[in-house]
Length: 128
Ligand SMILES: [Fe+2]
Image (cartoon, rainbow, N blue to C red; front, top):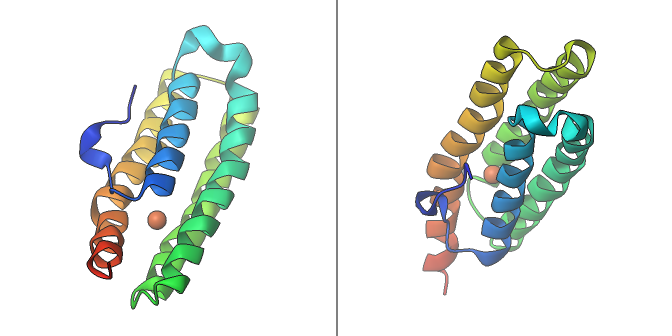
């Protein structure tokens, strides 16, 4: 599993959703699951939106000062992900496309969680 404990934010809803995202990417990167790749890309497409929406809602409720900047990261990423999804659906799995998923999906998610989601989580927890 690509998810690891170091990615934990301590906000249960967010952590559960992050785990689900990584579970889907695990499917996507496993050639043995090729028949499920399309389904998992479509799932990710929907789930990323839901997850970003839930995170943004939490940030708005908590009056997070960086909420607008954080939303911009999310919005930009939706565009990047959709482009990658279209390319993958057209071309199918290949070492190059798998490398791109690793960089663009796994890499982005990890960086985003470790830096930006954790920054929000620290703020969120400091309110309690
Ligand atoms: Fe986020």
